[in-house]
Amino acid sequence: MRPTLELIVEPGRYAVARGALPEPPAEEGAASTLRAEIRAGGEVSAICPELELAESTEAERGWRWLRVRGPLPFTEVGILAAIATPLAEVRVPIFVVSTFETDHVLIPEVHLETATAALRSSGITVTMQ
Image (cartoon, rainbow, N blue to C red; front, side, top):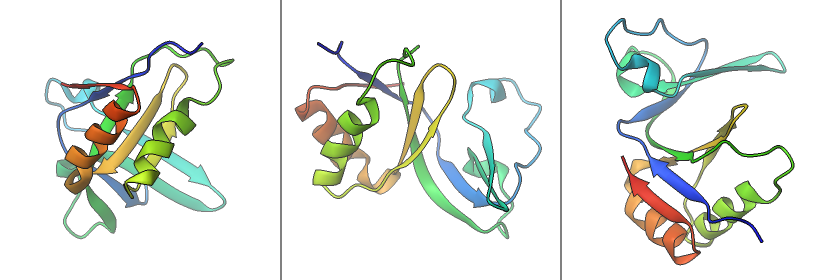
């Protein structure tokens, strides 16, 4: 039996951008944000706080970050399916990135209320940070 999953809705708005990550701000707290650069098949994409991007940057803005409380063992299966299924049922798009210890799910902010309700209905604990 899988332990109860917990998603933490982190503060702030995020963007998924075409191109490399911008330089992070030197301000305190920047280390607690989600920042990722993915290079695959000749494409470079970045995930970062929306405020770090120039207006001219090609990006999808307005995402919220839901962090799965970890660490998660590499042997655990079905974690993303348990999250993605209830969100798909209520037509909430997702963007996912994984790190060594956990999974990170981004959803459009306009769907946050619908998404959290669907996740809670499926037995997932959702905590607002």
